[in-house]
Amino acid sequence: MRNPFSFFGRLFGRSRQPANPYHRLRDQIFAVAPEQVGITPEGVWGVVVETGYAEGSATLIALADGTASMYFSTGGGVIGAGQHERPAAAAKELIRRAADFVDECMPVNTYPLPQIGETRFYLFTPTDKLAAAAPESALADREHPLSPLFFAAHELITQIRVVEEAKIRSGKGREAG
Image (cartoon, rainbow, N blue to C red; front, top):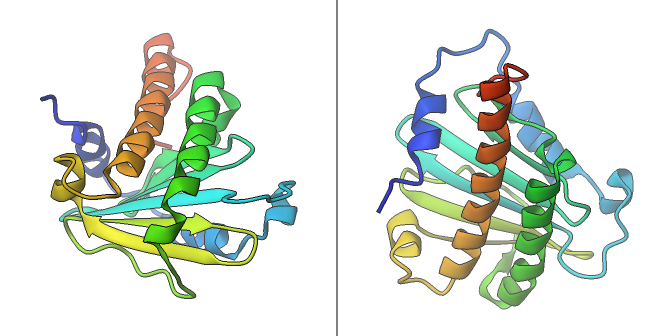
């Protein structure tokens, strides 16, 4: 099986940017209310999926309106991928799928970064932020109840990567930034 995380490896290998906005962006997503971004929530309206690596953390964001972004604690990332049809559709599908996993999560009011090898799922509902965590290896091996959500998140990552790689080939974008 092709390593789905090699894309992260390339991004983690890049030199650090002087002003890394990672923590500011991450804090913003956990503080935002759905009304601030024009969403009227009926159920799960946002999903954050984070995985811890030895090099740092990767954060994937999906909102019910198709917003899709991912960023890396080492710097770089992709903001605004949901402006493209396929990432927006994958973000909406991740939100739809997340509704099936609300009962697997617990309400939280703190948002720690994942441990190395851990994937954390944060689901935003009209009344709560919910969380669950699992070893990335168990999720990837389909050994955990949250594995379907993990793979829905990776479909979004794939669609973001396809758009970014097309930009790079056309000379209209960069891999990170």
